[in-house]
Image (tube, rainbow, N blue to C red):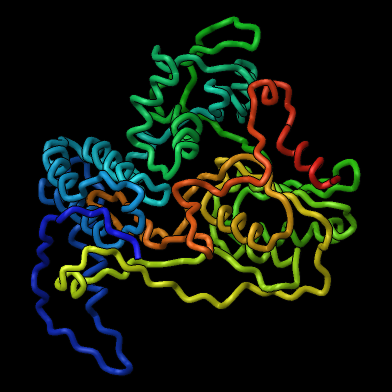
Length: 448
């Protein structure tokens, strides 16, 4: 049983319910509907919120986290009741809805969890979340352009060029001061990814961002880049046969059954191969079930997965002066099984990195438990679980992680990342040359 890191919290007072709680054998009590839909708090967008709305939104997020968040042990020094008191003054002082969400979006990161976030209303997205049609990455303490996904911009910026400053500030300083306070992340690698890749260049659509760019040869120039324009990313699924009859497939999401269908379409070629590489380095997750469906093509045995728990501390335990968080295991069917007439029996390598997140981490954990092959690359993002979504005042919304996943032996990967069997990191030289040392090492491992 894990000790709770929570200090004594401020008393949460709920108003009495007007109707009595009744239930029959064939009826669901109406209590949860009336408690958790919060229509009085989840008001539509307007430019200025009332003081009552601002306080209600803060109170709702704070209370939901206090009752259900599963990773308070990852932030042992966080006094959640004091956070509430500190943020009361901040949200009350916010003059506009935009200002209110700029404050609230710095609240969720204090919990240091990648599945715990506060999002601004859609009416403010163009003002807060717009970014240029390019992607950057932090490699060896340098922020490099990884991809330019717009033809017009490709004439000005090239992959491998370094961004040394943003709006006149050194890029690492800019990231720490202006971006990191808004980043919800469970691990240093996920925080770096979100700070210097996903969120670095976000801002108002109508305000260009000034970039100081350095070429590989050392020449520097300034570029004013609009936060607009279509972005064409890499292919979501790629299948090819590499030299030596090694089948390679990249899968960048588990959001739909599309990932399973693409894998199944490739199975006739995979079955002919001498080895298989499954690349989930860009896979941001979705549903763990789709990952298990793919793994079912690699074995006839039931596929084990991470052990899952929910918080089970309750008011009765607190009344008995218990200060320990208790955990209730979630039901498990003993392992996923999907029989296939043929499965691939050859050696397998899975490629991972910091972008491997959520359900893709569940996939990697299950693959490791299968003992089916080697995992190559860098530590994953270190965040999975079931988020609880709820609406906030002014059209915004939030989520809180309410499911705790661990290895079956109880060891942690949330807050750390799933570690590779063979660690191979990205380098500046490799990005600039187009080389892929992670894939090269995986192929070498398969050929052993």
